[in-house]
Image 1 (cartoon, one colour):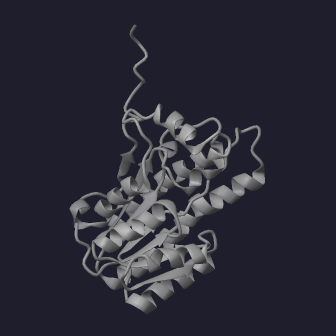
Image 2 (cartoon, one colour):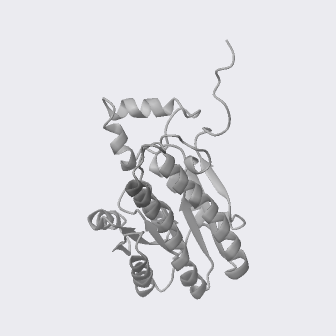
Image 3 (cartoon, helix red, strand yellow):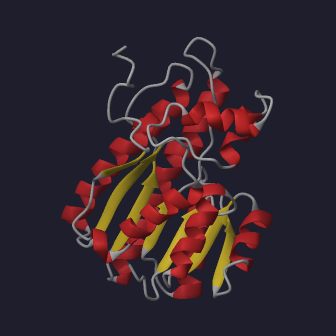
Length: 260
């Protein structure tokens, strides 16, 4: 899955899946643009890579930020080959409890941010003439609902359908550019920090989540990053519009509670 000198822009690159993805892509030879609203965190990510990489400040919900980030990528590396839309936030709440401000903020980051990234990456990849791979991080919550994560599920469901539509668009108007989505189970990253505060310990939280995963554990950022590397590589060249589920069997079927 060697990525040669391909250029990858990774949003949410300051932490969690984004940081692990930047490292995994760099290990396969890609040059990295770590983009995040957290500049200090993104700078820390690229310092750890031991290669030619840059960090850019990017509020994914702001179209002007996207235009500037893509321009900086082209100015530095001359091309864009891989986009990983990894930036995301989570807000819990049922349909009756959720504030519209939280709803709008979450959709702005998770769904509008992904839309804007794809919108501006496609022309840059087409101009480079090398094809490209767009990888959108959705969730198993983008395939099944969650009554207490209504906004998150709605945003990730939107990412799922957005990905399919973009894949079809690129097949017709930008041949060689692919778009796929990844659907992780719970991932032990900084996004779980607010949830961990509700438990006596992080270990207790993770143990409870692991009981819902047939594989017996939650995912690590590296588990997801490894799949992203595959989707970025030529090994997945016939995959576009696909939903890649990385859930330890969580959506495979009913739990084993039907016998004595």
